[in-house]
Each structure stands twice: as C-alpha cells, then as structure tokens.
Amino acid sequence: MRTLAIDTALGLCSVAVTDGERVLASRSEPMQQGHQERLAPLVAEVMAEAGVGFEAVDRIGVTVGPGSFTGLRVGLSFAKGLGFARDVPVVGLDSLEVIAASMPREGVGLALIDARRGQAYVRRFEGKEATGPSEAVRVEDLADGPVPGWIAGPGVALVREIWPGAMVDERPAGDPVALARLAVQADPADHPPVPVYLRAPDAKLPGGIDP
Image (tube, rainbow, N blue to C red):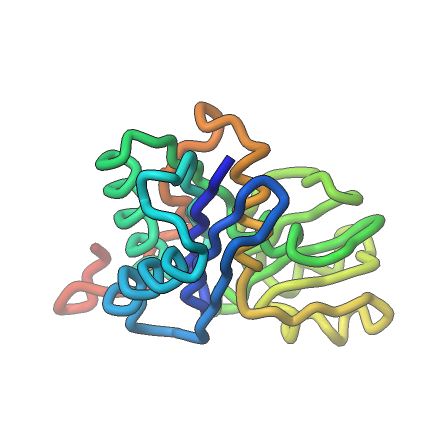
C-alpha cells in the first residue's frame, strides 16, 4: 500500500511516502509558521523524489492534533482535498501517538506537547499501547501519575526535572514515516480526519472576546 503522510500540527512541516515497510521518500522542515505556503511544494518535491504520481497513492495519513490550531488545519485541508480528488481514504492520527511511535519504547511512557498557560497536552502509554486518550493537563498535576520510563515530544522541558531518570526524546514532532505506518494499520472508519481540540484557542476577538 502506497501511503502519503502529512504532518503540520507542530514545529515541523513533514511529508513521507511509503510503500508497505519501504520508505520511498521523507522530509521534515522546522517551521513554526508558514505551513500553508510550504506544504504543497514540499509534497510535490517528496512525491517526485519517491518517483510516484498522485494516482499511485492508496491512502493518506494526516495528524489531527493536538497541536497548533492553524497548523493542523493546513494539513487536514490539504489531505482531505487530495483524498476527495483522488478518491482515496484519509486517516486522521493523534499527534502524540505519532510522537510515541517515532521512538523505540518499552514500559510506561509519556508523550507531551507544551500547551502553554501552565498546561501540557499529554498521552500515556504502556509499551506500544496508549492507556487513554490525549488530554490537557496542568503541568503541576503530572507528578501525581505513574512514573514514566520515557518521555517524548516538544513538551519534555516541562517535566525533565520531575522525572530525571526517564529516557528523553525531545523531538519537535513525530516522524512522518511513523505516521505513514500507523495510517496503514488504522481502520479509516475509526480514524476520521477531524481536528482534535483539547481546549479553546488562545486567540481573542477585538475587545478580548473569546471566538
């Protein structure tokens, strides 16, 4: 199965093309803003490097959050538009699950993103399986949970001192190859390309009114 993976939810603009377990092409570029302008050209470049046309894509995997409200919508819009045009399934995957799947891991672990305002977006794992959904948690409350053997993601700095013995992987986002492999394994019916918002956006309307 040829799979196109797209991730714009966090601090990278990432694209990968795989064919089963074989990686045909993969690229990630650090980016906090500008995903909208860079994504389409990056997809075209990676597809050209992979040596396949869009007609050869059997499935599209895309991160649905948690992450940047603007960034994740860029990836979702592109993936859904392409999926509709090519009539291929689009699989939405949790950003924290992709981060966890991007590293070798055993035992209890934690993938987390700095959500600011004293919070983190967190998902807990036992081995390779998530023990619950992603959630927004106050950083001060994280110490009350199980002691993790590993911590991963762009929120690691928030908890490094809480668990100094944990293995650390401070990656800015997941590996798009891991995203592609998760997309192959997932049932599209159970993983729709719908954004995951764990709290309201920080942005305000004029006058400080919540949107």
